[in-house]
Image (cartoon, rainbow over all chains, first blue to last red; front, side, top):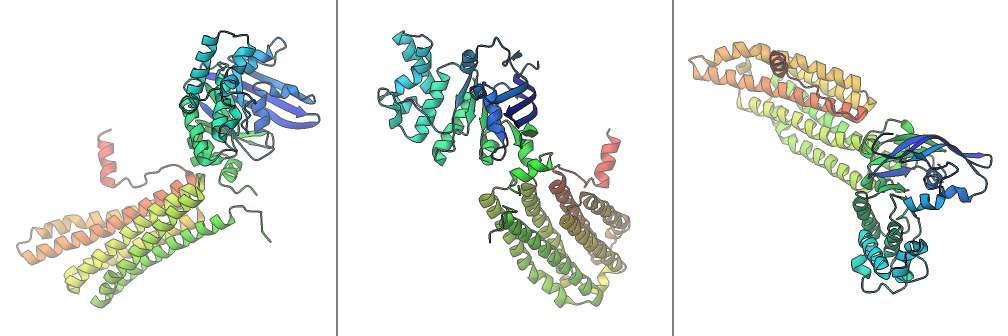
Length: 253
Length: 236
């Protein structure tokens, strides 16, 4: 295993019943980098993202072949504790989805579910997670207010704080800013820059400019195939494959 | 009916328009050299004056290309070959403007001197102008056809201009040592004229490099002058 790889995916196929949604995907995802998945709707990028913490297990008709290794260990092996896997590989969704409870309770929800009861410990987790999500200064005086009372951008950062509270190693983000206004979007992007020092970030985005702005590595998917993956600077200045060029220049007919 | 087969159709039109503007600019530069030729061959100072006067128009055209390129970047956020095309076109326009500037330098010389002053060098200068014009035409063709190899060939053509320049230097330097001040001044001016044309050729080579960058996505340096090449060879 190359030292810097967090995930190593080899020949991954995924079927929804008869339909093959992912075709022989092979890629490495580097630690402490932002990796962006781009591609048109239905290309398989979100499906692939969800294979990284086995979210697709929840769908009955899904069948997966191939291998995904996290730190060298196959995450699809029978004895893998999926709950622990999802703790290590956290996820932030397109629409901010705070629980209908206080800001504080939102953040410590996971640690509490894991059995942490000590108030001091929970306070520490709440503060450090909210700080890491760059939300602390905005909410420190209203931790008991409902998470739903926050703005959309704040709600999304609250969800990021909730993910961080579980001390994950990887954060998966599925179009985390598509429901946010431009300023809230830029704040989340700034946050990602900061978070990648501690975590590995994988993001699905429909905004090519976002991928170009924030990611270190970009992977382009088309009809279930990984067409091209490489340094973001190269992908956006001189992609190797014509299909990538056609997509990112907007000439996808 | 909206045609969805090319979602970037209007951007493509603007890119094409940018290309047209660059072609027009190249035609203006070529036109300036054609006029210089007439002025030299027929000893017409009024034609040389036209070249000087027309320089403002060329500068304005360059500015218009600059403005459109900036707008395209701001509004269309081009990437990959689109971005390279905009950037290359922008840089090519400033090289073309410089090529045209040298025509103005030539025109100014013609205005200040007599036809006979150039002596036998007149035909050599006309030969260099003919060669330069062909280079500009060819490099623009390579841009339109997106042909990097063709661009590379244009850069090769620059060697001829370099040779035409350097081959005259020994004799002209000799003349500058003449005891007659007037003769020495004329020889110096002739060196400058040859140098302008040689430099114009360098700018066409730079344009060829831009074409190759736009097409290939890599930076090329075609323009290794023979002096530099010799230096590099001697100091390996």
